Length: 168
Image (spheres, one colour):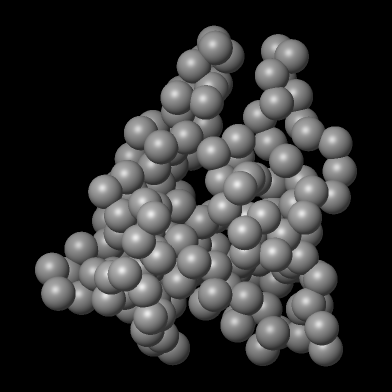
């Protein structure tokens, strides 16, 4: 399924294929390091631990997993992968990451919209996410609400449980 989102930028979101693993991994690593990383600099070793499993081999496994729906967002005019997303069959948004140069241009929203549509096809009415500090406002703008206490590490808020109930 390929979908186009009307946004500031032409974006195509499609289910990832095995050949997309390296590019998707690069998106994850850049987004975590460059976009989210500054929120976690005070926690020793946190960023390094977060990046440990972000390898092309692991991303390939996530793409191939029958328990997830993994998408990539491309800017078709230049064939660049600008973002990635992943939804579990349990209704959890596992990934929604965008490289820095495409933030605020509708890429994250296009990814989330594709994941929400897939959740609807799977019959999932409640979506959840563990949001980063950085993405918390993004999820709130998309209709998610905080549904639990923040998760702390070394006294710092690192994740926020978020949820969105969908109408039938």
